[in-house]
Length: 196
Ligand code: FES
Image (cartoon, rainbow, N blue to C red; front, top):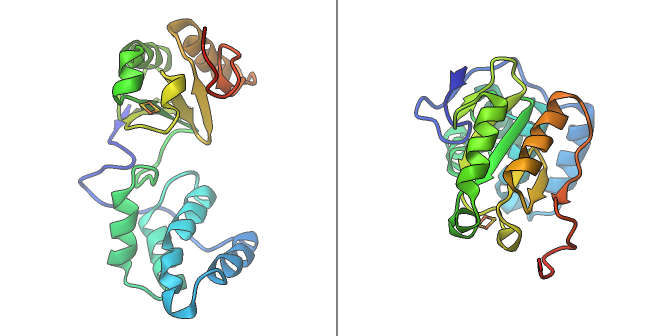
């Protein structure tokens, strides 16, 4: 297994392949930049980091940071400062499925420790590691904003809520077997309505 939190790394930062914006993202960047006053266009750094990460297999290489720096005409270190502050930006390669486990108090009180153990056993990854087959990276994060439906996790862009050991294991097994998963509440409740 390879180790290292994809969003919190001491050896900032890994080199990747040459990076150029896709034609689709070139158009998208123009739309994003048009939302900011010309003298404040560097404020578009967050959406551009997001776009670059999406285009680059869910992580930001040194080449991505350089491209954003060039696109927004801002120092590379300032782009890197923003990228390294937020845990949603990955500064190292991650597995095909990035599993973020909420460990903050409301989820913890509802059993997030058991969810973490289940995920680590099922994926054969420890926290901050990527599985040998590249299918999973597992990290712990702070509150993801779905506290009333904890314990919960995020896998890539999707939330999975109202988890227990059984339904968590099923989610992981479905991914391994290329089967679709139901996103959101795993117990069928709508939004954050009363669980009882
Ligand atoms: S505490 Fe887990 S989502 Fe808020």
